Image: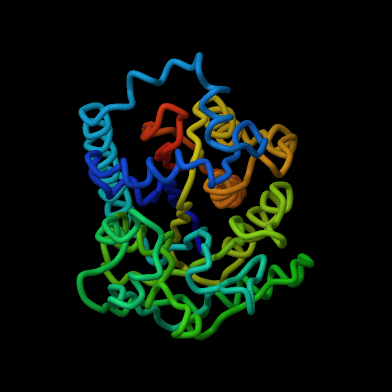
Length: 340
């Protein structure tokens, strides 16, 4: 049977590949007060957020020098994760991620999708696609998009095994055996969502290893799977992989998170510790407001960690950094973990 030998978790925020001197582009947008945020599970505008966090101790970190130093630490850790992946001699990687209206638009948005394709195309955006992006996104494209079009191997055999097993476990799963692209007139991307593109470029380093993207609609209401369902889903995916009749060495990779677009270190560390300790009851205790906007990607990590628990691998925090871009504490937290 297949063996799950490694787990990796990595942040993929566009802020990671935006120099600190340019963080003000998104920061100014944050402070316009037209963008609602979620903090401690509650929805609020920026002015309310800054008032609520007036006594927090992170203000000294909101400066260019500290921001750039933090980025450099993150880059070193990403290099370490790549070396860990490379040393494990992986045959196939399963990536737990999410789409943010990049390929699934309003016409179709499954809650769970197994992308059991023969191959995946990833390529730079066109000039027209760039015009449809929010401010500050295009300058980070180098972190998750290739310089030229590339074709990456899929893992259709494993994908069909996972789908069949999930159906037996009463998950009504969607499957894609051909790469899904949105209609051209609304597309912002010509390849894979940034959650997966980041892993291809930064962890796997585009080495054409077969991958199986497992997509959770964490980000887009109203059909976001709740956190308890993500735990159960992850356990079921882990079981399916372990029952695959293959001698493959499999890595599971979580992409996204932790807290953003409001940085909440206390919440993050509670979730990190719960994943390490397999304290699923603690994770289930949080209501859905804690997993909105960027925070929603934490559910990809939770599903992945539940799958890794099925394989008996132990989780370890490798590094955790905070990227603050406003006095209200907006920005991104960056978590990096391994399971071995």
